[in-house]
Image (tube, rainbow, N blue to C red):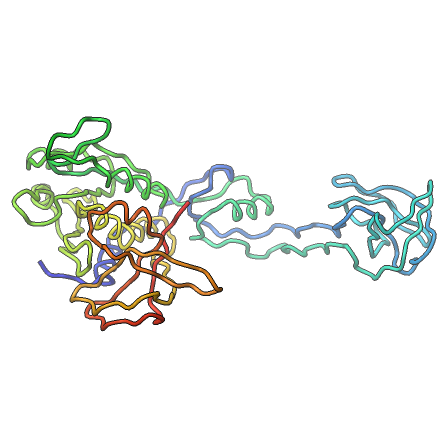
Amino acid sequence: MKLLPVEAARARMLAEVPAAAAETVSVAQACGRVLAEDVAAVRDQPPFHASAMDGYAVRSADAPGLLRVVGESAAGRGYDGRLAAGEAVRIFTGAAVPAGADAVVIQEDAGRDGERVTVPEVEAGKHIRRAGGDFQAGQALLAAGAPLDPWRISLAAAAGRAELAVARRPPVALFSTGEEIVEAPAAPGPFQIYDSGTPALAAMIAGWGGAVSRARPVRDDLEATVEALRKADGELIVTVGGASVGDHDLVRKAGAALGLELRVASVNVRPGKPTFFGRLADGRLMLGLPGNPASAFVCAEMFLRPILAKWQGAPVEPPTIPARLEQDLPPNGSREHWMRAKLSFAGGGVTVRPFPDQDSSLVTVFAAADALLRRQADAPAASAGEVVEVLPLSRA
């Protein structure tokens, strides 16, 4: 098997991903989706000069002074008249500033006596939110490809959008293989372990925008594996386990029986060397991940997440950041190594500490990690304090 560098393997995979298709959903249903259109403002926000405080709208030229209160302006119900010399309007936060007024005196600074109010000196523009101060008509607010979180949804709603065009969720079929795997709550045999990979990967896929369907684990049987692949309900099939070339690793053979054409045979990465990718004869894409949880999770971050991102028209490059090592590291081997690690933000800087045991079967280490520390193939020894590249992991 030819070992491809991580970037080359990812590029080959992404070259096979179809262009994003769009569908329209309500703004309330858009969270977690990827925007498939540009969103621009249709009017100014706020559309009028608005008060930032409860108090009195006045003409700054009349302050300080004793003014006559001629009306009220509340949110959603403004004062229709125009302020004349010696007049004030009672006003509330968010309400439109009446014509003629150019300042707001907060109520704590004013002395009200019946229909009269005493106000101190105030400068023009004080406590007023200018029309268009947030955004202006025609202004670009959101671009296609933006992941939609609650704050961006708020912005789209503020622009008057009730619906948004979003990328269709990629349909992903997920299943694991291996005689040693059993799903809880079934009782495992003496040589079996619980399936910890597919529940986590199903959550990852859903969190990354995929529409995941999860099948039951498949035993180490070629016919059963072929049938599972044939029935997999997804445009992308993700398998966990059986990705290597051992006697009991049957996923590649099953794929070959269905016309699998490999685009990536294996990757020069640790953990995750057996990862493969290709296209079946019927056009469905197939990503084979290793069975060890850490290997599967690392390669999901390296490859599955970018695949799903491109499928939805979102940025595909893993968002790495620099951090300083907290400890010395020995030279790296010939494979690029993504080490599970812990970040620290003490003292205003970012530091990183890799876990001492990087065995790819350890679920506890990945559960405690919040980053992957990247070490290039054949990297020399690194000293504490050196800047390294890390990929922060999503943690709720």
